[in-house]
Length: 270
Length: 329
Image (cartoon, rainbow over all chains, first blue to last red; front, side, top):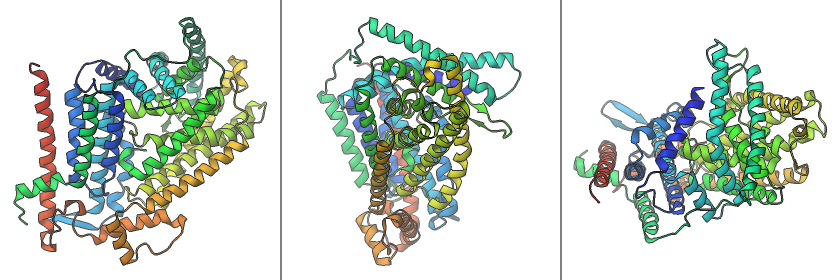
């Protein structure tokens, strides 16, 4: 129930953020999708023990969030919920890779700990950027961008319809769960034998709803195509966003800004 | 699967496989009857909701949830189900930070292509044309277990080929496969139970939904098998091609990468990484002007300081741009 509630609230909040106005919101969604992919590719292309050299990449999600009006606390909470999988896979690294890489005073740092830290930094960067991009683009922008990039119409239409009915069905699922919770005094999730009729009822209502929706869509002249309200225009601002950030990602890949700054600060002393 | 565990090469290969599969499904859907769009949209939202409802598994004290790929394929046919799963995974990647942009391809392959084009044909084969409830349940459980295990194998292969996690492929597999056995059993059981429930309440849906692609049999299975072999080959090739030229030649000189063979390539790349890790005394990424051995500590400390400073700069940058935004103009 907590999961459902959290999903519903989170989606609602993202939707609200996506309807805002900011310089980031106004960038062409195609430019944002492409920049996001370049960003992820650049971040994951580093050696597995790299930590400090990844830090310059924090500029991109920070820019998106601050300029796009996405609260950092909101991003952090979403990331914390999604983190366990990457953490679970990388957690054994310190046990398997015990070769000491360097010492800080009495503490020896092994390759395993470095690679664990690297995975966590990668996770925060890539997932944070994806969330910030979604929060400043919105589903309609993403769909128009995908269609503009040549993604098949069936996929784009499906994504749009899924998102539209997600709110309705999440609420219906929440209602079903709440009804069960009020009638039972059991803590925790419903047992398996009750889940099936619960999901079954939900499915029946879903199918009935889809029949009604289909009639309604036909009555409004739906021909399998979702029309964009605003036509997409790839302006100089979008070119600057794409080219500027891509250049930055490439530069940070070849020049280690962190090492340079560190050298400057410590004066290259041993 | 998450972006943080992938290498760009593996991510790109999996994107290629996913794009080919989804493109094929979308082409097949174009000839589907009208009125599928609303059904697919709402069913996608249903599966998304069902995924969020945890249930207690009797006798274990643990809880599980539905993944839904096989259920969608049974209700809609494999092509529509793949498109629906793609949309669900895309929403999870974008709006729930689950996965990531680069890992989306791998996730579509593991949780979309596998249940729709491997598990579902198996289900059709085992269940037959007009299954009894018991036979349907047995077929669904067998297909779901197969799908779950193949998906888990995919996660292990992709992670190992990426070389980010140090967990050896064998150990990882020994962890993942047993974990996914009960997940597959529950998935199959719930899928069969929901389909049976539907068959009682709405018999017209029991036959497997409208236009369930019965042709998704042998030919498609062969195509998927071929695609899997090609993808596996590409993965192995990418993995062996992963290290930079310099590291590769170091490994050749030291003889880490001696034996040949496609099957050994993945573990070879892995050995190479761990071997290199032991050999390289300083952090390669930190060496601006390759420091002497005595400078090791200096390099690491300046790395730590530099990383912290860069992060602080990024924070300052964020503060500055939001200030500008709040100001006039």
